[in-house]
Image 1 (cartoon, chains in turn green, red):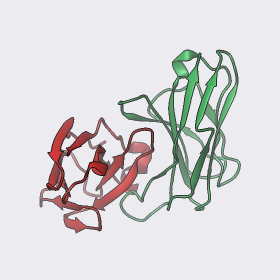
Image 2 (cartoon, rainbow over the protein chains, first blue to last red; image 1 turned 180 degrees about the vertical axis):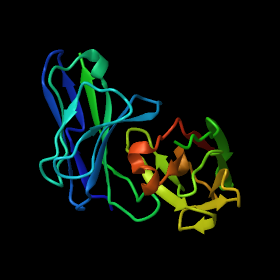
Image 3 (cartoon, rainbow over the protein chains, first blue to last red; image 1 turned 30 degrees about the vertical axis):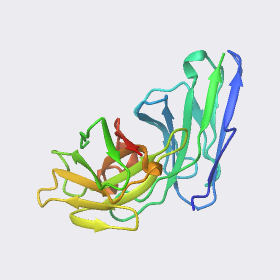
Image 4 (cartoon, each protein chain N blue to C red; image 1 turned 90 degrees about the vertical axis):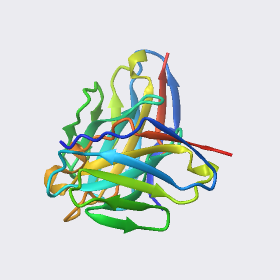
Length: 115
Length: 113
C-alpha cells in the first residue's frame, strides 16, 4: 500500500490568494514529482526533485514553486492563484533503482478551483 | 524520448480478455516498458513493467516482441471495475528516469456489462 499523502483533497479559493499544496511520503523515497492534470487530459510533469535541496522544473511551465527541505515533504506553492491554475495536482514519489524506472507511487491528488 | 502511441479508447464486455497494444518505435536499449492504470479523480497506479518477452503478475500480462518496438498489455477476464485509463510508458534510469517519461493520453477502457 502506497504511503503518500496529499492535502487538501479539494480547495476552492479566490483569485490572488496564496496557496500551498502539501505532499508527504513515508517510504523514504529520494525522488518526488508534481504532475498537473485537467479532467480527461494528459498528466504533465511540472516539478521534480532528486532529493533534499534539489528541485527542477518539468516539461510543462508552471507559475508554482516547490521546496524539498526534508526527504519526506515536497510542498507546492502558488503565490497568487488565478482561474487558469484550476486543475488537479498529483504528487508522486519513486526510489532510485538500477534498472527500469522503479514504481511511481501517487497520492490521491489535490483538486484546486480558483474563482 | 521514446514516444508511445496507443488507441484512444476501447470497449469490452465483462469476462472477456482485453489486449491493449502500445507502439514505441524509437525505444532505447536501456528503456523499460511500464503500464499504469488510472481511475477518475485518482492518481495512476503501477500495473506491470517489463524489458523483453513476457511478464506476468497477479493482475496482468505484458507481451514484448523481440524487436521491442511495441508491447501488449493483457487483462484477463475484465470486470466493470477495470474501467479506467491505461498508460504505456517507456523509459529507464539510464534515459533520465521519470523526468524524461511522458504519460501521453492513454487508452480509455470501458467495460460493458
